[in-house]
Length: 209
Image 1 (cartoon, one colour):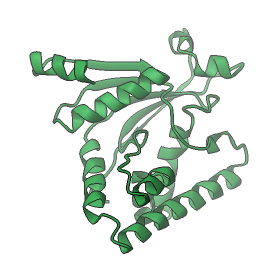
Image 2: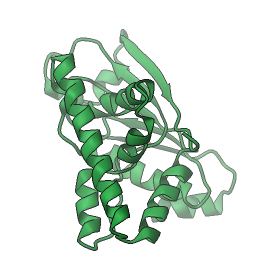
Image 3: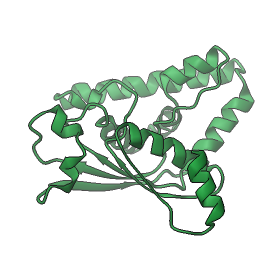
């Protein structure tokens, strides 16, 4: 993070790209988020970035999967509201919300494979947000998309925590080509194969939503 910050300071206005795979993608997300808060938006290419949550995307039954996501959103939003009601650090809450809004201007490219349980939840994370808005439950999802249950518990214990894997906006590139096994689905080499079946979606977070 410090190295990237130094380069951006020495060469202001230059084109600096971030790229990483797996754990490296997680480090790139952390670095990119840090730079956004300093007013610098870096073009970022994140391959198989880790999403810290249960891999609900691997559930084959769409109704069960959708039900799990709705339940998680309601629980997460309920915990967030409960903490607000108890006055658990109202200033922390505003900082967390402002942070998410600031990050919405950064749009990294996420390359994920549905057969990779480490990163596949990004698919459901963004799709579910749109589904909840279509159902008229945008308020619930707005709270849920900014928080994770684990981080809310940390905050309840008085420990400052920020869900680093949650992103407001992204260009999501999904490799829907057949993957023989997890090793291939999580591997970096899949992304330079000559014939890939890719699905690309743009997700933009609306601050006023």
